[in-house]
Image 1 (cartoon, helix red, strand yellow):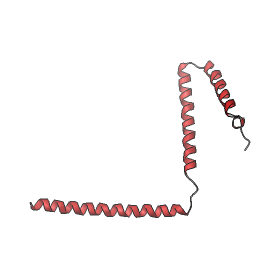
Image 2 (tube, rainbow, N blue to C red):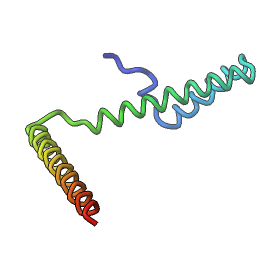
Image 3 (spheres, rainbow, N blue to C red):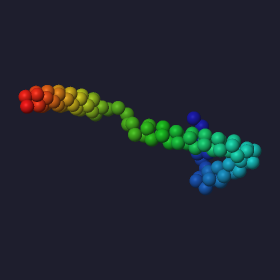
Image 4 (cartoon, rainbow, N blue to C red):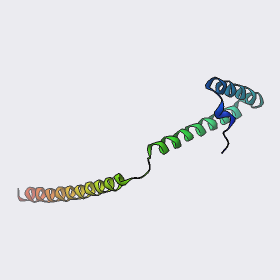
Length: 100
């Protein structure tokens, strides 16, 4: 894929380009249109950053994934057993309260 001119610019050139585009676009739009377009572009940027963060935080799956799945299953079993113990204790407490 051919690299875009935007990505070949240094940081100062990118800032200058953004400022020029903002001035040119702002000259053609009213207040409401500027507000809508500005918010849209900001939302687009935030979503692009979110996608990049998700992609970079999800490394390719490895054997550790199966280990993690096993850990999750073990935790789920432990939680289920604890819930059963709680229910048993509740029943015993209710029985004791009923005797008084």
